Image 1 (cartoon, rainbow, N blue to C red):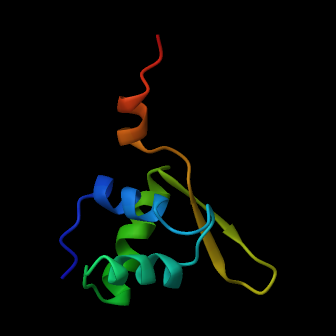
Image 2 (tube, helix red, strand yellow):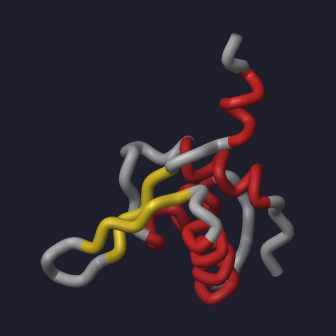
Length: 82
């Protein structure tokens, strides 16, 4: 079972090699950090972050969904607007 907070998942998505990632690339990044989850659990978490506006989705011409971060609360807290 995926036991990550939304903020932790955003942090792991940000740590991926590129700024725009497939679900498989996000899953690979989690596995490399020894975080085990199944595809459906990850898909549900990513869907909720997308629905709530934290990550965006850019489908490619061949139908692959590419995800990117729109807003990360941890980064906003580190760099407050003055």
